[in-house]
Image 1 (tube, rainbow, N blue to C red):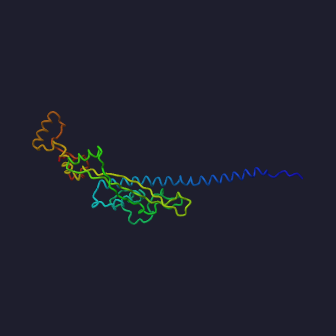
Image 2: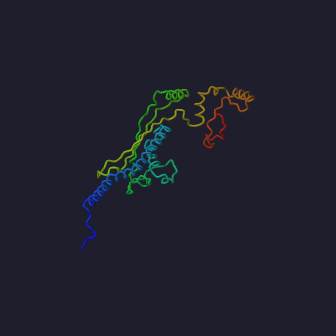
Length: 263
């Protein structure tokens, strides 16, 4: 009796086994790459958030240099709440003066983007976001010299800058070899300096500007006559000796009735 199904050649069986081995080897090489791509976006998003948070902290300190009125701890707490909690979680996305992470000791309120593939948080606790401060000199360049001249002519000073250094300690999901890998620490730093010509109100703005504007020393009576004389030729001419602040909402202008008041 003739066998209609002869056995396969040994060479074909060897090729099949080689293909399976190559497939397994390729998966072993590509699987970590796929995982790395998935986590690169997550860690990249946290890096961008850290950069924006450091800028916010530096600007907050530059706007309020006094640690007595705004402590470093308060800036750190606000930075954690406003950047490392989901946008609609705290006060439904509205920034308030009492923003804080007090009471949040875990990953509650964080973005789903900051979770690993198993749903565990990369940022386990808000206190793993830390903020440190350093001083930053303004330097002696042309810009710094010009700012110093302007502020000194107004009887003010331009303080040195501050550097906000923010660090975020994260769970390491890129290391799939070690059972207890070292955490990943991402960092960002921003330097900012407060404006020495900053004003505490309309009168302060007028007093600072008066040192730079000679016409502000003209007596009111003489200034009125000069303004009337100029008005004969230029109805929309300047008001001699009059300094007006920038146009802002009336209720924020020291209680003034309108934005046309001379100081």
